[in-house]
Length: 455
Ligand SMILES: O=P(O)(O)OC[C@H]1O[C@@](CO)(OP(=O)(O)O)[C@@H](O)[C@@H]1O
Image 1 (tube, rainbow, N blue to C red):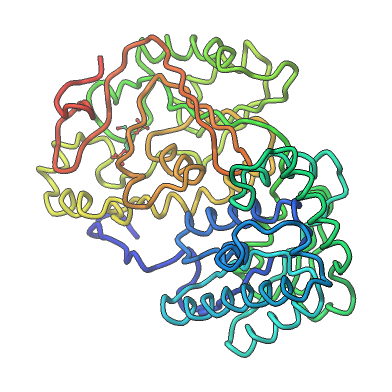
Image 2: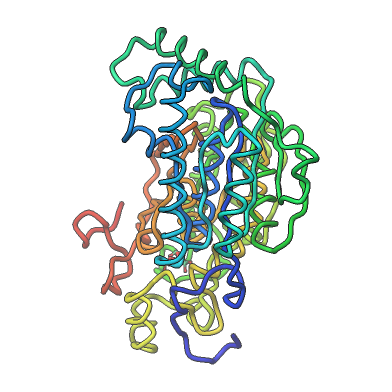
């Protein structure tokens, strides 16, 4: 949009991908138990939700639990007819619900989370989906790293509802026996299935084999999945130190940091250390190309020797014709725009500028790179930080643009098997609050009582 055109709210239904493309995909997870399938499924779901694609997981285990809530390992023995019957019934119920969801809720990506361990089962899913006009993407996760398998057995499976209230040691032993039963019939995806679209992940992220990717959405998904790894690491997020514009309540711009902002920049190396960086860990500093983030990371880079990278994609949301104005001035000059932004902040695009939706789209390569990377500290801006944070915490599009992200605070995120762990470290250096509540055009507002600056 060129500068001067009126700001407008993009249709919320518009997704990241071309709206004319009506591809529907069933992502079929494949793999023995404890191979990280549900972890991959959960991450893919979070990514899809973040880029605005309607997606849902259909976990066959959840359906099976309705028929058999706490089965022992022999339930999964392929020679146990009773168990076999129930497992098929559960798979059929899940597929039937998934097809209904595609049709009635306009779903785009259904993730079919089960072992899908035989060629027969996969052929059935492929045929059922094809008949319904849905493409399939098989994602096989195999793993021969005993340490990873043991970790999955203990950390994930002993917390499964299947073993609720049981001694974790007994549960882990039973779960190992369950795996043995699956191994009796397990067939990896091979040349017999080369007409299928599939991705095979060996030891999550170390080796990837890709076959027959046919459309854009599948290629994005495969690219995302192949970037995943499960090595322990953390991601630190910080806004720049308080800027001269923050002090006067002006938005956007490329101002220097204030004296207090500089104090934060000097405190940042200590704050990062205090947050717990594993000894000898490799860490990279990412900033935007704007002065206030570069100045904030300056001492950190000099004192630690960590590599530093400037990303244009991390620049603050472009506020177009409103750049350099205060919220009060915007409300006065562009009252309709001001109200429209409050009405739907995620989708509202500034005249000649961007919306939060636009920022998410330009941040996609950052997320891909983050998934591939080890420890990263990102020094960026309020709106950009909200978008990145909402990816890790699966925060809704309505909520994320209103989230409070205080200045002079370091956020440490550590991805875990299910969800992201968070710790916050506040530098004891005062700063204004740049948070603004709906309907307000106050220069500085405290999110708690809505009136006080955060000094
Ligand atoms: O979307 P809202 O809530 O307006 O927040 C974004 C604004 O945050 C600010 C501060 O008010 O970012 P920044 O951290 O870069 O200083 C503005 O520059 C930017 O326009």
